[in-house]
Length: 315
Image (tube, rainbow, N blue to C red; front, side):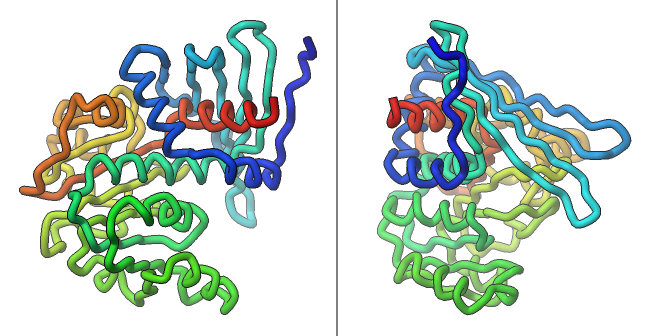
């Protein structure tokens, strides 16, 4: 058997991803995790000497599929701005041979957005009608792609600090993503009366404060490579029902959880449930007596599951 892995570039990955149902792949993965058929270790952060950057390794084992793997993502400090890349290596548990080496840029975008979509489907009120998106980049656009049919959205508002910098073509492309989408000129306008708020930024610090909202909402938040990055004020966790992608690893990496624990008396045991709990129905949809917060840090297992799916398309 050849020990040379099949190599997939970013354009190939984009094409193959369009052929797989990423949210469905993730639902199976979280069922496997709940059933003890998958292993998700904590992220591994390694710093380069002399402040030159770092890399994060995302690991995972999918026993039922007979594969394990690692995504490695460096953050390289440069004068012209940091460079972030990511590659996923998929390995066979039967032969010990590498199966796939894939540029993980597209995979990361898809699995990040699809994990949020799985959470929105499990957590959002069934009658949710108003969706707000903060951010306008590829990750924000992928979030919209995966959640647009999950509820009967009557309005979708999007705000991003970078909207004014977009070219007319980029603005037109953004507006063309969904006929219900409205681009607004302030964060407050986007959040007004929202039932579901998806934070999809690369911000290192808070982009909104849940305390300013007029009614309880589902707020979803993702990670970026900046140290201790967080999109909501850490102290706000004390006033919300908190969920995450995986309760055993997320609190050790999510910036607002670390800060809330150190400075604001928040306890990781306050996490109501994670995606394995929700998908296996161990935890029910929350009642909205207060805001509901879902935090994902991105799991190695998500990268491995999506890489395995596109590998199977070819083999």
